[in-house]
Each structure stands twice: as structure tokens, then as C-alpha cells.
Image (cartoon, rainbow, N blue to C red; front, side, top):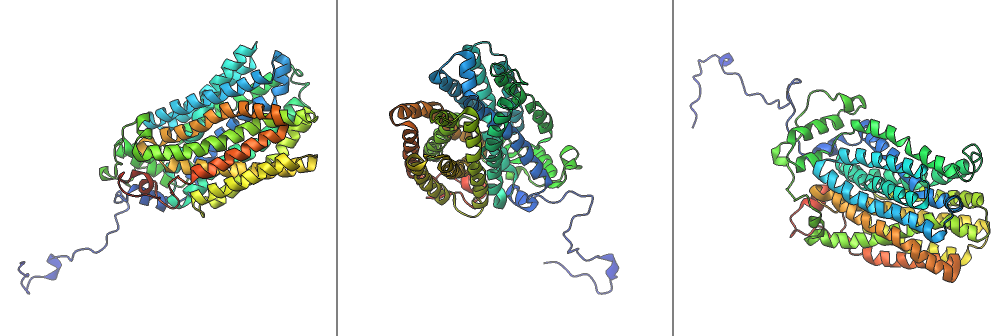
Length: 494
């Protein structure tokens, strides 16, 4: 028990304890915790800059992914190859994408998200320039494999870093914006771009034998600028904490909290937002972890959905110009029709952006798959003239992009930070394999039943997607830590 001071003691000698807990302006604020800090930061110009740099890379990815299908007739004539060989070029790109996803995911989880993103675009640029100089079919085939490696990790690593630097309440919508660039604006712009350079500008670029080569050059060079500006990207604080690098995590959070573009380069004194106690549970950085316990169940469920969704998208984007030419339309008309139909993709991505912060993942994916199945059947049965081709094609593309976007939002929410990029790479890689295999299956059905056969195949894939999505865990509204870092025996979602 304390003894009170004598009554005669001057009060000024014992100053009262201060009740003001606000730190002085020149002191570091107390640690707040990672999730709380990001939720407090919200959405600022810094996060907007991160999204812009990611979207820029994905925009070029979209153009590259659509290039072989759009320029297919010219490449076939120039190199003297047939549909099967052209399809194999697409397959080489997709397989390269699988390799790139696996390599990029490992690099991102081992050495950082920023390192992986820069390497992706540099490899992609190299492959594109080799494609432009290809003197024969074999060289073009090899170059497209290299392009695929560069493209592969771009999207999955982008999803990982964006999911880790934004507030929980904004995560779904902001992740969906990446597909607005690639699957929405990118798909529309790509076919408009190909229509321009292979049509009115085709003569300037050397005619049918050379315009497709210059197109590859045009696509490759601007990516170097994106690499230059990406050096200002802040590293994911979640990744840094998963490696125990607390000081660097605070430095990254200081850059994110600056709220200004200039803060990316010079954020000022580092503030203490997190401490060693906030370090995330250690998980071995290994692909084996993706296939263990709860992670395996999640990989199987969403990976199966990715197979159906991505396989259908790649099949349609690759074969649509060829399918339309088979119906008697010119190459220019086919590219124009495909571009118009992809307006549906843009609206699908925008709708996903709206729904991602309002509706649970599982409900959205399953509903979109059912409606996409109906749209595919409608196209197969009724798309017999230009108006119906455009309208039904746009409706189908709407649900295709809504599905792909929601799956891309869902995927990085499934895995712990230490294996998030690798987990997303495996799930998207499963879709990559589907993109390599399903166009061959589509050609089989095309030879049997024409365009209708291709769309009935896609309808069946969407039916299976509904079943797969049923087994996916619900992550809507949860922080990444609550959804992925909890003990394995703790129920996260049914």
C-alpha cells in the first residue's frame, strides 16, 4: 500500500500523471497490427498506382494471348501450316504459361512479388521479339513457349500482391479490376488492334507475310516501359512478415500509408505499424504445401472450376475467328464480330467488380456458371445470322468473364501468405492445362457438329463447374489471415 504525501508538500513537486496517450509528433506511433493498418489505410493513390501498374502488364498479356488466334489465317499462309499446327502454337503458349506460373509463383513466395513481376515481363518481351523474327514454324513454336513463360506468372503474382496490400473491405472489388484490364478492355482492344494492323495498316507493315511479324514487335516493346515503372512498386508487407522481415514490412506500410505517388519513392521516416509479434505463422515455401490437408481440398475444388472456366475461355478466344471464317465471313469481319462480342467481357468484368464486395464467392460463381451454360446452348442453337451471333456471343462472353474474374478473386484468398503465389499459380496452372487441351477437344467436336458442337462442349464444362464450386470454401468478408492462417482444425467455411 502506498503512503500518501504529507499535506504540507507543495503540489507542484508531484506532477499528476498524464492521461494523454497521443504520441508526440516526432515519435513513431504505436504498432497497430497488419490487418488493422491496411484497413485503416483503405484505398489511396498509392494503391491506385499499384493497380495501374498491374493492369498495364495484364493489358499486354491479353493482347498476346489473343494474337495467335487473331492472326492465325495470316500465319498459316505465311508459314504453310494447317489448323492443327496453329492450334499447337496456342498449346505451346499455354504450356509455357503453366511453366511460367509455377516458376513465377515460386520466385514470388521465395524472393518477393516485385522480383517475379519484373522478370515476367522481361521474358515475355524476349519471346515476342523472337516470334517476330521466326524464319520457320519450329522457331515460332519455340518463341511462343517463351512468351507463355513470361505471361504465366504475371496474373497470379499480380493477384497475390494486390490481395496483400489492400483493405479487407476493398479486396474483392480491387482484385476484380485486374480482369477489367485484361479480360475486359484487353479483349476488346486486342481485336480492334489486330483489325487495324492487319487491315488498313497491313500494307504499311509489309502485307500478309510481314504484318503479323511487326505486330509481335509492337506488342513486345511497350512492356519494357512497364518494367521500368514497376521498380517503384511497394513489396507486399504480408510477404515480408511471413519472412520475419519486420523493419522492411514497416517501410512498405509507410509507403502505402503515405497516400501520395511521391511517397512511393520517398515515404519519409519509417513508422512502426507492426512488430515481431505480428509475424505470420511460418509455412515452408514449397509446392508440396499446396497439396497438403486443407490446402489440397481447396486446390482440388477451385482448380477443377478453373479447368472448366479458363479452358472454355481460351477455346473460344482462340477458335472464334476460325469458327466465323468457316461460316463464310471474311477475316476482317470475323475480327470485328469478335471485338464486338467482347464488349460482353468488359461488362462481365465490371459486374464481377461490383458483386465481389457484395455477394459471397460461391453463390456468384455457381450462378454465373448456370447462366453461362444456358448462354452457350442458346448460341449453339440460335446464332444463325449476324445479329444473333453478336448478341448471343456478347451475352456468353459476359458470363465467361464474370466467371473467370470471380475465380481470380477467390483464388488468392485460399492459401496462406507463404504459399499464396504458388497456390494461385497451381490453381491457374490447372486452367492453363485446360487451355492447352480443350481447343483440341473443341476441334474434334467442330469436325463432328460444327460451331454448335463447340458450344455444347462448353455448356457441359460449365455444368461441371457448378459442381466443383460447391466444394470451395467461402472467404467473402474475411481477412486473409482469418481465411487462410487459422489452425487447420479450425473450421473456416463449409
